[in-house]
Image (cartoon, rainbow, N blue to C red; front, side):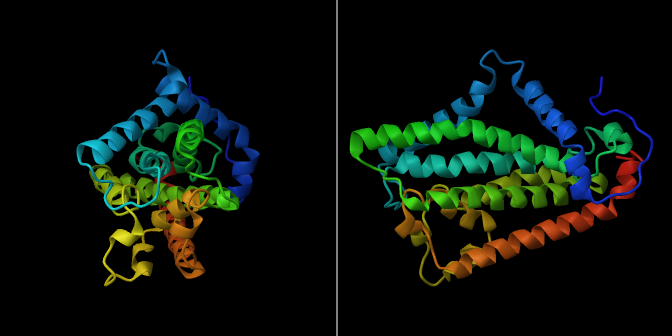
Length: 281
């Protein structure tokens, strides 16, 4: 049975106000998605911590011991640098991968629900955010373990930038989810492109490399046209503030790119609203 009750049309209100009014329903949708994903596993939500833990451990072993190189990364310990990139990347990747099915999977619910159309890509983003929060203990475990044995990394006052990274990533994920979900209504082939987009964010963001690895001929600001780059800086500022944080200009650029993505996504979603309400997806 669907958790979305069919209701008669209501007077049109702003999407933000409507989302606030139906926040309980939206929360239920996210919990339902988590239950459907992890409920069939005996370890359940523990997989949200287990996957990034094992992935970071394997990549650390491969780069630091098998290859004998950490790609020129000078920030130690490397595994903490790695996991602070992989955990946020998992949220972004989930938002991108699931967004193309945001309407096609729940077409009848989207057509009859009193929720605004933005609720369906938002559901995808909130699901990824829940996974992100549940995986954060992995970061804490690595930080505490390596600090006890090696004295690194130290935690600095720039930890206050961490919530800013979450805030900016939320809108980046939402903007991308709106664009991709709207595109998928008319072009299902977009689903095939999400894997390429996720590879772009993995390789073109400082997940396993540092900004210093790029030659000086490439201006630093060009790298920040990828907004995920600036977001990762805010996550890592607590441990290596002097190394990862740049001037305010690149973060203004990051915020501007995210704003453009969100505006484009909202416009595309608005243009497809009639199609969604007819359940012709």
